Structures are given as structure tokens and as C-alpha cells.
Length: 100
View 1: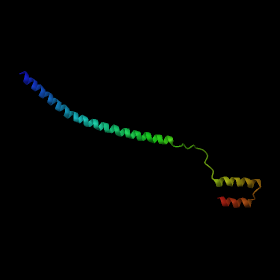
View 2 (view 1 turned 120 degrees about the vertical axis):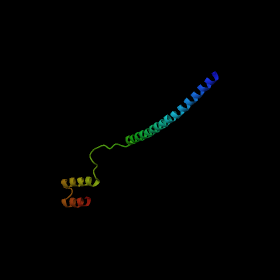
View 3 (view 1 turned 90 degrees about the vertical axis):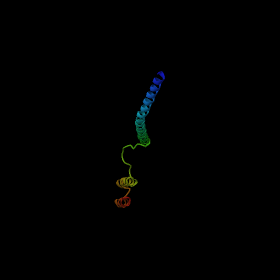
């Protein structure tokens, strides 16, 4: 009799183990999906951080007055010379047409 009880307990344990394995399969699938999503999230986070690092490395543009064109600068010099009387009005107009 004792042998039969041991055999029955063993069979019940094997059946329980089989059930646990089947149920564990679903859990493993869920765990695999979660791990995949976590890996994707980590990848997206890394891309965002890399993008932020690139932005930090880029030189920052300071707002200020725009750079003057060479022709504009030369035209101002010529107008000053004209005002001082070094250039005549005719010479100033010729040079102005040439620069513009």
C-alpha cells in the first residue's frame, strides 16, 4: 500500500509540473515581449541623448547686428569722403553705381 501512495503522489507531482511548464510558457512569452519593448525604449532613449549631445556640441549663434557687406562698408567710406570734400559729387555717383 505504501508503494501505491508513493507512485500516486509522484504522478500528481509530474502532472503539476507539466501544468506549471505550460503556464510558464505563456509567462515566458509575455516576459520576452516586455524585454523587447524595454530594449526598443532603451534604443530610442539613446538616440535622443545622442541628438542632444550633438546639439550641445554645435556652436551657438549669438544674435547681434548683421555683418556689413564689403560694398556697403565701402559706400559709407565714399560718402564720408564726399562729405569732407575729397570726392566730388560726380566721382561719388560713379563709384556708387559701380558698387551697387
